[in-house]
Length: 373
Image 1 (cartoon, rainbow, N blue to C red):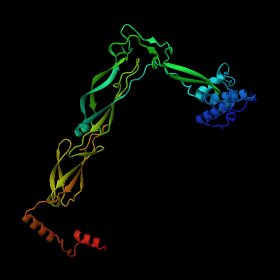
Image 2 (cartoon, one colour):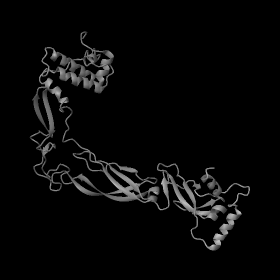
Image 3 (spheres, helix red, strand yellow):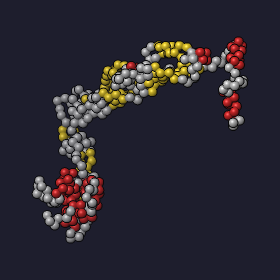
Image 4 (cartoon, rainbow, N blue to C red):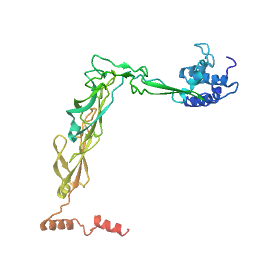
């Protein structure tokens, strides 16, 4: 143990090197010292040293122990070297050429696919919620063969080509070692089994397309783009696997009068010049009823009034938003001669053509701005 080199030194790394740095250094040195490539007398020994260093530093638990205790493992009395007997040198190149990784069991349970359904609802339905039924097409397990794909009374046979693994291995010897490529079995298309007598209902697929009716409750307060998840209502799983989920995407239609921003509602209400100048009490529609709104004398166009608690119910409780009312003063486009004369008199009484010692008129201020004053 005393003559064993530090594992970080072997790989040419500093202590604290991360996983990617360790793997990169190992791949470089393994290629350099592999006996099939490097014919130097000490190549095999160096390769074993590199491999041993990588086996320890690439394992999180072993690395932590090595960082604390060095080459003496307090649990096992030392870090042993790897097994290099048999075809060990060739197998190491699996990680370089795609042969590594665990195999997927083609007969293992598989979760079903998720589904998405887009639902368009009215503005007030989004505000107050609704309950409705929807029909969705989805894949479900065949009730005749219970998902096996085989005719009742029979069962699938294990594929003789891949022996039920669903994968075929192609081994090639190269100057760098043995290359192992794995691909889906061409005989069973990766399923690991052959169905001799297929189910007459699903034709060997194990599942069928069906229309499923579901009851959906839309909570009050949802907004456009909201997504609801119905657990287990997606497509059925395979070989006893769980079903996927159904995601319902909400689209909300625009309202002709109300606009929404979060939990607040906005609307615009027209006022006549007389109402704005003299003040008035008007009736405002809300989401549930009509309410009275007092307009003070001298109200300007664009003024916002707030109706507390008249907005959207908050999705997670805690009351409602507010309704904001914007008043717009409407200028008449058709007036009688009498109305025009009255407005002229009103303008003269207001001193629009001379400031008379009072604040200059809007028109005078505009003229001054054009003159650059």
